[in-house]
Amino acid sequence: MAKEQKQVRELQEGSYVMMEEKPCKIYGYSTAKPGKHGSAKARVEARGVFDSKKRSLSQPVDAKVWVPIIERKQGQVVSVTGEDAQIMDLETYQTFTMRIPEEEDLNPEDEIEYLEYEGQRKIV
Image (tube, rainbow, N blue to C red; front, side):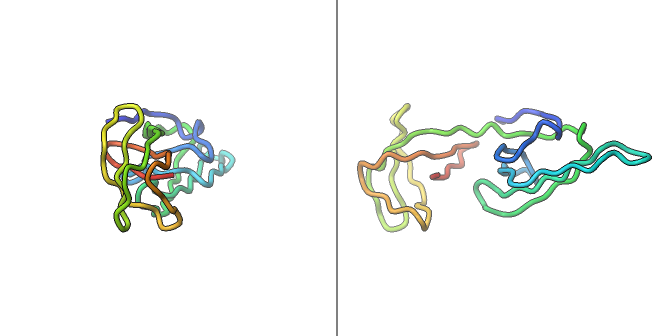
């Protein structure tokens, strides 16, 4: 699996973290001061990269968490059929079909950027 371990204190907004075995992008990070009997705690708010589900995590700042290594790749639209687009990776020339996000309007020959993690892909 393409992931590494980091301490919670190393996380920041805009980076990625694994929550419930799903890669998530952090949109909120806050810490609470250490109390009388414990260490500082961090609260992480994130949204699933591929399922857009909100998740949160509350851990001591020195706890270890998994961070996914998500690749950002370039592709070219080969054809568009309904809600799906045939994409060709510009590095490997491999072709595959992806769902077009609702707010996107793609045409053949358009160059796009997409995220890939363990066979899952998403147009950004």
